[in-house]
Image (cartoon, rainbow, N blue to C red; front, side):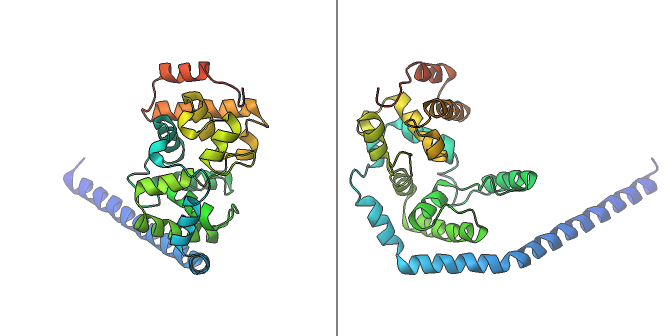
Length: 252
């Protein structure tokens, strides 16, 4: 191809790329403008929640509950399983995970529904402390502001510890201590690898996965937890197989 013709072709491509970039920027700006009222609504929701119950008070309420379990009292496999399933970049993000948000957005657009939120452990803790499970964009915005406050006020280990002590495991159990005692008649420190990985899977859908209600679904969910741990380098396939081989029904 003659050099003059090649340069002309490159200029046309460059011009198209510039127009494409400009269009994307305009679309982004338009999206922000359209979302501005909802963002303000979410911010107002956050401000009201913090005014009614300061963050320090919300944290203190979780820590004062019976059976509150410190992070170092939990088996390592339980902590590794939580991170693998819920938020594998937990120790590297600032409260929100842009990669997870982008992935969730693609899935939501593909299904034309709000099926996945991309929430981090910090965001889930924020929701547990202040908000309902209702999937509304304004609530998600409020949740993000609380998440930023948590990351500023607490260490990562403190956030993870609070999360584990405030999530719902089904069958009326709202903390790791209550779940371990209720399902296995044990303290969290006494749980086996099989019991730990079973419990970690429950908060995803506690009513559906409750071992008391649907033991088969609970065990199927446990397999998903083990698969996530293998994928994140926390277990080998051989170790996961051994855990499944030793799996027991709750209360057995």
